[in-house]
Length: 237
Image 1 (cartoon, helix red, strand yellow):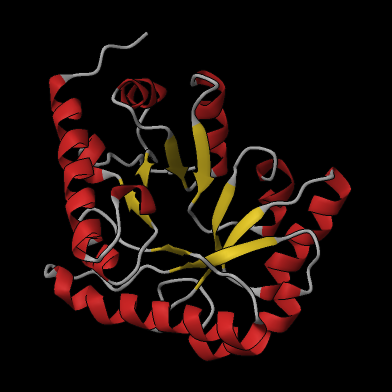
Image 2: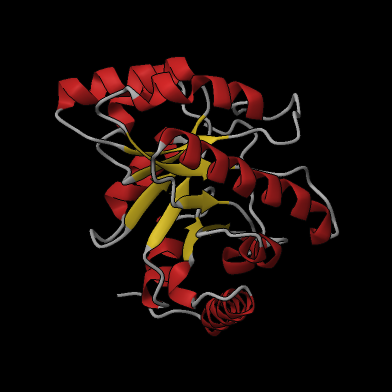
């Protein structure tokens, strides 16, 4: 069993306190907001340490890295896929993750649905929305998602639980607020018009999660503030 370092313990306590405060300010409680520890690029030892600090759900974005890390980590760790999922990685990825945050196109959703049927699975997914229309980011455009939500909802194996977004990078977290607010408004509109529940809003990271919570986030994805700066390999697989 790993003994957590005082620095990670303090970081986790600090983040959890900030989440709780932000939730209360928005009229909710800390239990209404799930913390996903973004562990990509960090070793399995860091996962074990984070588990001892009370964290339980980890976000990974590269299948090959995640598969090795999952095999080395305690079985009580739970895993979310938060990166861009390629169609040819769907089959090995489906059994490993309890929630996919980044389903960003109809053909990918259809592929997930087909392979899930072959594997006997009912994957939980979020639909990624590119709220700012950035060419460097994946995701449905808001108008496109409004047009494609009906065929998405017809995919019988998929449990579509909500939406996810990543706003443009900004030093000031207030610059992210309009994108978070527009995602919430889009979710509300889609849920009302299609008579479905889309309770989950995955939005907010280390630099802006309090603003995201104020705008309705139910999942925040926090890595650097827990694990420290990431170190990337020259060829990140």
